[in-house]
Amino acid sequence: MLRPMAVRVVLSPLTKTAYSQALKGKITTTPRTTFPLKKQQGRLVIPSTRGAYVFRDGWVDGERDEETRYKYLGYWPALRWHLVEGYHFSETYRLNVLTQGGQWLKLEGDPQLGPDSSQFVVTSGALDGLGTPTIQLFQQTKGSWRQVWRVESHNWQVEQLEWVATSTLLLQQKHWNKTFSRAWYTYASLTIPAH
Image 1 (cartoon, helix red, strand yellow):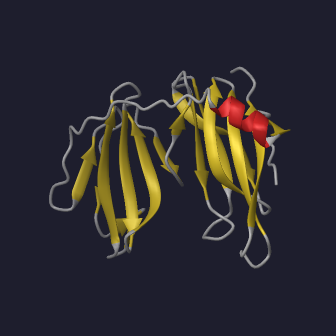
Image 2 (cartoon, rainbow, N blue to C red):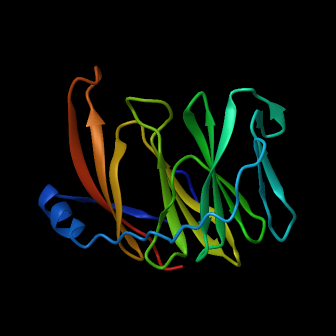
């Protein structure tokens, strides 16, 4: 199901051959990670221009939850992002991104940065697991990040999603039969208008 958003991303079907050929040009943006902060006594304190954010083991969004823990995944200096993983009973439930400017992004999966680092996608969910399969696109506008597009599917889940250009991603979609005993794949390109 497509929801109207600020950006109209076009999904175009591809053959397996076209997908495989285009995939040779994939671009992986891996920011350098540093670890300037340490968790102390079950607390992570993240500084920002809007004040400090505190992640305290045993608490979620201001409510007590003994099974919740936080792990500091590091700082991306190029983007000025701190990444904090929240997990409950050893299952990751959220990736928290805190920017230097004090913006707090609560993501359902790891961000895959675009080649120019001005946008990223997040995939989550699976037909054979928990959550609705979802792709979200975020772009930086006027110094802050916002979700500009989202697609949810009840027919396929993301098997692979790769950037091949600033405005193009390649998508491998996994489909299942009703009993989850057989899977097959389809392929598409996602074209993002210039921003």
